[in-house]
Image (cartoon, rainbow, N blue to C red; front, side, top):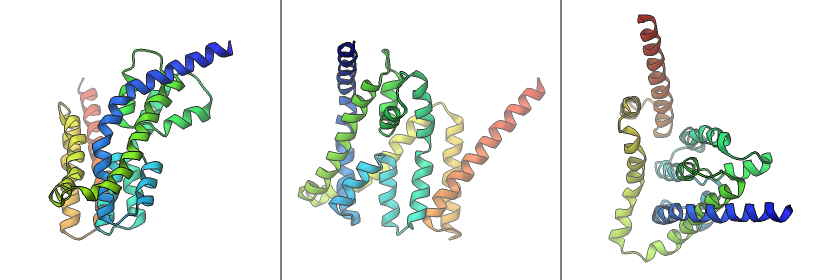
Length: 241
């Protein structure tokens, strides 16, 4: 019986590795760029690799680098990245509904490795989402991100100077790449993005808040206002019926 369980777990883990390979390949250029930008920001190799090891969140790591460049305080950086990553609570809860029942510590282990990409692969998986499968998908993705971050830091300097400077736009390209797919056919997300952008511009140009706190405040205010407007609209529609 124990052998059957072991074989099943090994098979699921192998399947996870196979399905996570495409994610690992996709992470490679983004993590390379992160390592290069981290070096230009002033981080050491140890700090760069540790950020990828501990945080493991591409958008948040890029944002943290940008905030560090702007001289933003530590508390603003922590709060901003927390808000950006708060969606992981929802992804973990959703995945928990379809994953096999297992020990809490094992689930907590692979919950750390859930990203937008690994969640998408796992949630669209036609077979059972086992613990071994999740560790396979997350493991290869995690290894690719961490190793590539270090490689970007070490070998990024060998790239032509023009290419190094042009790669700095990867920060904005990544944010746009994350945002645009969400905008398609979703008026609520469009309004949320526009409101947050307008509020952030107003706070920054008026010098009411520093750059870091401006991002935090505009994100929270936009989310609260758009959600409140959505609730009021639904109530109004229900009363009209």
